[in-house]
Length: 345
Ligand SMILES: *[C@@H]1O[C@H](CO)[C@@H](O)[C@H](O)[C@H]1NC(C)=O
Ligand SMILES: *[C@@H]1O[C@H](CO)[C@@H](O)[C@H](O)[C@H]1NC(C)=O
Ligand SMILES: *[C@@H]1O[C@H](CO)[C@@H](O)[C@H](O)[C@H]1NC(C)=O
Image (cartoon, rainbow, N blue to C red; front, side, top):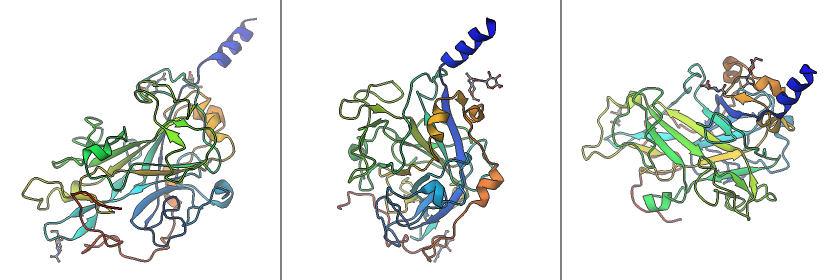
């Protein structure tokens, strides 16, 4: 009898998935199949991770697991693509230099890239009991506003933040604008997507309207999903570590302003944004979310395979856009210069 009781208990146990894993850099270049599909080059430089089926055009019918030969992410079945803009440093002589990325804490040997989370509940909730729905093939979303240059404009996005890394594991405070001081170990950006889906549309014209924040509060405070967007998804979050350390010894603006600027010119930091195109194989993500899987441990119970950081680092693409993005540049690739004030579309 006893084994039956044990088995029943095991099956009834809450799933506990805080899925945290790293993805090495796949490529850094001016492509954006979500916002500028088909445009080569796209408007501004991005750093991209994930499956190597990534290209300028990725419509919802694309078979990302089928067309990829590898992924730069730790879970071998994750052929999704995750991307953000890149940071540049603006020197006192007006030229720009790209800020490289670092592998995150516990992934120091990764070649740049970013860390991805899929959470069932707030990260500090050890129970992670809530049921969340995984995304479907063809699903994609965007969060942020590249035109935001004021706190007011940034405020409608609840959780796109910067952390000034005094140590490599500093995780607070989280700021809405660029830090104004030299950060000893770099700057981390944390980008959290909305968590309520309309249950119907894989995408929307602004790539945001099919998703919503909870009706009240945040995913962390367990706010309910609104009736228009009733399906509670996992909290997708990126952490990106920018290696600003090499720039701390250079001259900074005398007026105390921040010398870093996004690749599309934003020097305030309010236009922090992120892109996601779902590409997990079959139902592998749902299985992971339904399995006790705490950070990277015990995920194998879902059948998920993980690859080594070396294997992740080997999955890389050659840029299709042939331009210098790494020298000391007079203007940012695409022709942008630093913008502090309001911009028009
Ligand atoms: C501009 O400043 C940077 C940083 O000090 C320096 O490396 C670069 O050579 C300078 N460029 C010119 C054209 O002076
Ligand atoms: C989950 O992992 C974290 C970090 O490794 C650890 O601190 C925590 O105790 C784990 N929780 C459970 C329930 O195993
Ligand atoms: C993780 O797996 C180990 C070994 O199988 C087991 O002892 C432990 O209870 C598991 N943890 C969770 C949270 O399921």
